[in-house]
Amino acid sequence: MWMDAFQTTDIVDIAVVAIIIYQLLMLIKGTRAVQLIKGLFVLMVIYLLARQMQLDTLSWILNKVWGMLLVAIPVVFQPELRRALEQIGRGKFITMHPGTTGAEEYKKLIEELVRCSQVLSQSRIGALIVIEKTTGIQEYIETGVKIDGVVSSEFLVNLFIPKSPLHDGAVIIRGDRVAAAGCFLPLTQYNGLQKDLGTRHRAALGLSEVSDALIIIVSEETGVVSTAKNGKMTRFLDEKSLRDLLKNEILVEKAKRINPFKRGDSNA
Image (tube, helix red, strand yellow):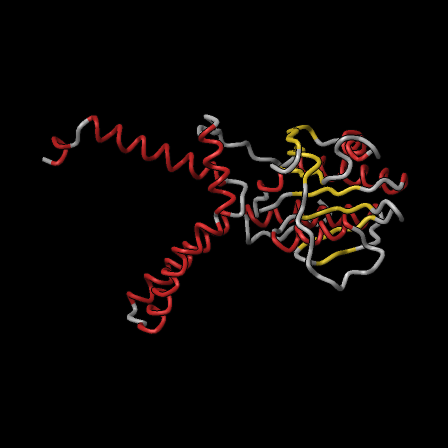
């Protein structure tokens, strides 16, 4: 019987492999590699269906794509591979799954961000606040000083006070906590920006082009509050419009991810 051949070592072998796979998934969690893996999975499904349905032309094209991906994947995943190897080298291979953030925590987060933005705007203090969403931006978090602190308007305002150690970089928020401050963001290559938009706006737009993060920008010169997402910028936001935008981007989209058939309520 096959049960007789199933030994204790086989159980240990399967358990070790399962733990390694889980930890590898935890290492890439919060990075763009997650989205890339989803894309590879979709391509694999299409390839198998094409072969099953004998779609020869599509199968041939996808077969050539797999050959190119063998060369491209190590290049595309280079930041994540370096990060994983560094964590293994530091003895941090075993990671815990972070807890999820509830609706009440997000509502509090929105109010703190709105209050902080208004204080910074009135004081003409420049700021760059990134709200991580589905696409992980761990590589940019690692360019700054890790904090893992509770989000509050007072805390954020103090981070951006001129001449403070971290005021020049971006603050990145993951869930309902400040993940890091003083972070460096990629600058957009778009040359059509208005002349009065400086480095903060270019950095916000640059990150929005490579991720689905929502970025809040407060101009140091004018105090104007703006947001950037998906390569587009929305300017001249007052308290109400910023609050409504954050509710739609955070609360409504969170509800859609939980139940895609449920209509969101922007007045939640």
